[in-house]
Image (tube, rainbow, N blue to C red; front, side):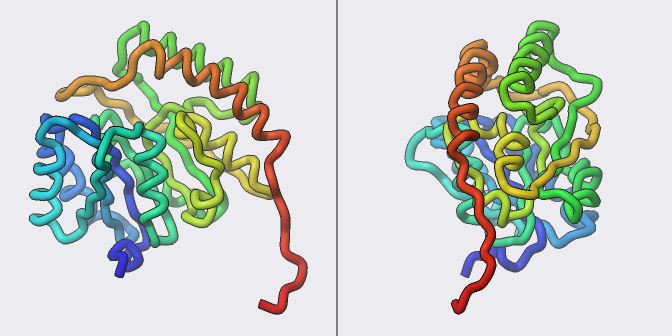
Length: 243
C-alpha cells in the first residue's frame, strides 16, 4: 500500500546534497504537520545526492511517522524529482517546496484555501533575500517567459506550490518544467491558477544549485519548447461512455 493514500496532502521536497539542511528540514516539517488543517505528509525525493543526505533522510523518516522518501540511483534534476514525487503520490493534493527553506512549510496554509477553485496555487516571493544579480536574472527570465507563454504568472521560480493530483498527473513533463507549471496547467481545458504572496527567507545552510545556465539561459530556451508544445497540446472531454 502507498502510505500517501492515507493523507489529504503530500508535500514533495526534492533534495540534492543538502546534508547541512536536513536537520532544519526535519524540524520545520515536525513543527508544521501537527498544525496543518489537512492531514499532511512529506515525501522527500533524493536526487542522487553524493553527500550524506540519503542516510540522514532515512533516519528522519524512521523517527517521524509522516515522513517518506524516494532515492534516485543517480542525479536526474529537479523536474525529474518533482515528477517522481507526483508519480508516487496518491493523496488528492500535492505540494512542492525546496529543501533550502527559503520558503517555509507553514505558508502552505496561505495557498491551500484557494485550491478548491483552481487547479494550481503558487506562491509569489515577497521581500526577496537573494542577491541583486539573482533578482535581476529572475525578473528578466519571468518577463521573457510571460511574453513567450502568455501565462501571466508573476514568479514561477517560487518553490512553494499546491496542485490537485489529477492536474499534476496530466502535465506534459520535461526537464525544466518546474518553471512552467502555470503555463502547463493552462494547457488543460478549463484549468486556472492563483497566486499568493509568501515570505522569502535567506539560505542559511548549504549551497545553491542554480547558476547562470540553469537559472537564465536554459529556461529561455525552454520557452521555445513550450510554444511548440502549446500548439500540439491534446485536450478532450468525454461525452458518454459504457466503461
